[in-house]
Image (tube, rainbow, N blue to C red; front, side, top):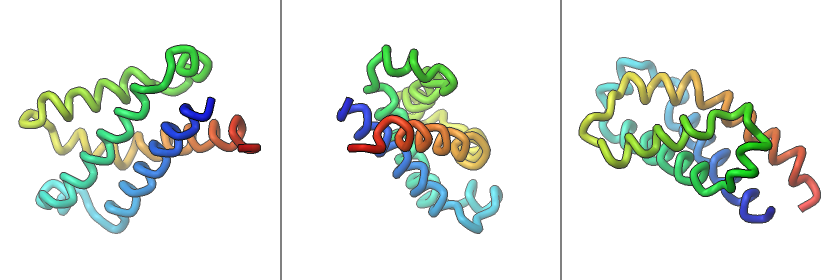
Length: 115
């Protein structure tokens, strides 16, 4: 179970970094900021990579999290980089990611408290 804790921690830390990167930033500014876009996308890729390394049994136990969507986003970002829609990245980072971060942090707190 230690391996899962590390992947989950990576996910929470990457989500926290995205929150810092976007604090006080409006959508219009984000879609015009190549550096910020690259930073956010890289952290979303880390999140997807970590999620993809979790064992299927673990994901099945935590089916409230859309693991396949998280990994799928990573795959699109990596393999179809030139087709990335920055509006979707913005929506993912600002509307969907905070919930994912909270869910993963809850798993860490509940299942890995003693470690």
